Image (cartoon, rainbow, N blue to C red):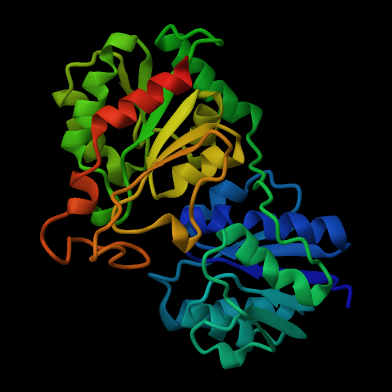
Length: 340
C-alpha cells in the first residue's frame, strides 16, 4: 500500500511530539503521501515551517468536550485518510482513529482500547522512543528503526529574536554559553531549585553566561534561581521565548542542562551536548539523550525508583532521594569539561 493521505496522531506533551517527528520524516522519504498531524495547541508551534507536513490540525482535548470531539471526527472523516498512525497510546487517540473511518489504522499493542486499531505493533521496552515510534512504519515496508534525529525548522524571524537578545547582553557570536532548563510538568522530575542555585554559584568563576529557559509555567522557578544565586552571569529568558526561539537559543549553546523533559530532546535534535538529570524516571524508559558527548546524572540503587512513567507531583516515599543525592559539584565539573 502506498497511502496518499496519512494522519499522525500525537496529542501528548512537547517532548513526545519531538520524538514523533522522525516518523513524519520517514513517511516523506519513502512514500509520496501527504501527511497531516493532529496535535494539541501547545505543541503546534514546533511544527511550523515543517516541510514534511501538509496540514497541522490542532485539538484542544482539555477544553473542547464532546462537541469539540464530534467536530474533529467530522473534519477527519472528510479528509478520507488512507492511513492513521498513532504513537500516542491514550483511549482518546484510539477512539479518534477508529471514528475517523481511515482505511488502515496502526498503533501499539499497549494502547488503551488497542482493539480499535487494525494493526497493533509490539511496544518494545528498553529501546529509544524514536526507534519505538519508527516501528509503527514496518507494516508499510519502512524498516529503519535506528535513531533518526528529529528535524526542527527554525525561521529567520526566530533567529533574529535571539540575535536581539545577544546584542542586548553583549554576547559575541562565537562566545560559549550554557542553557539550563530547570522546569518540568512533574515535580519529581525537577532537580530542586536550591540545587540549581548551588550549581550556578559553582559555575560563577568560569565567567560563562547561563541562560535559564522554559515555559511561562516555569518562570516562578527560574526567577527564584536568578534572584537567589550570587552568579551575575545568569540571563533569565524563561517564559519569553516561543518553542522555536528556544530551539534557536539551544542550537547556539555549548551545552544544555535539563531534567527529563522536552528541552533535552530539542538539544539532541539540534546537536547540542546535553547534561540530563533523572529523578523519578529512568533512562531505560526510552527518553534518554543519544549524543556522543551527552552525560546522564541519576541516583542508582533506590528500590523506590522509578516511581512512575511520568513522575508525579510528590515523592511517594517522602524522601526525594533520587534528586537530593545527585551532587551539583559533579554536574559543574561535567559542564567545565564540555566548555574546555
